[in-house]
Image 1 (cartoon, rainbow, N blue to C red):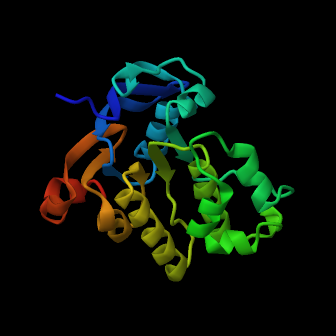
Image 2: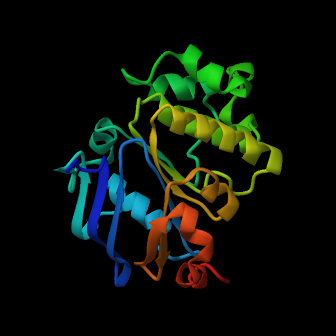
Length: 231
C-alpha cells in the first residue's frame, strides 16, 4: 500500500500546561485535498504548526513520504516539499512583491513568469511594497511565495479570512487549478462552502481531538460533525 504524502500520527502539542492537540491522526495523499474544520480554538492552526515544526510536538509523528520529520527545523521540513501559508500571511511591508517572491524562490518552484501568469494582479504590482497591498493581494502574495519553493503539498491557514466575495472566488479558482495540476493541500478554513468546493476529505477537530473524518461528499449529512462546528 502506498504511503500518503503527509501522515500525522497521534500528534500531541502542549503550550505550557495547555494540552492543545490530544492525539491527532490525519493523512493527505499525493494530489489530494483535505479540509481541516472546527470552531475557533479547536486546534486547527496548531496542527499546521505542529506539522511544520513551528509548534514542537510533545508526542506523535509527522511523516512526509513515510519518513519522519519530527525534530527538524521548519526550513528543513519545507525542503521536503511542504509549503506553508500562515494565517498572518507574513508579508513584509518594506519589501516589494517581486522581492518577496525572489527571496523565497527555490529550484523546482518555476520561473517568476509562471507565478505572474497565475497571479496577474501580482504581476501588475510587482514593484509595490507589501504594506501597500490590499488584504486580497497580500493573501495572493503569501500563496505565490509558498509556490516559489516548489511544494508537493500546501498547508493553508484560513486563506479566505476577511476577504471580499470576489477575491474569495478568485482564490478558489486558483486553488482548483493547483489541485488539477496535482498539488496536494491541507486546508484550514472557516468558510464551509469554500472548503467543500474542492476538498476530497474532511477532518473535524474539537477541543484538540479528531471528532469526525470522512469524504467531503458525505459531510452535509454527518450530524456528529456538524455538532462540532455549531457556534
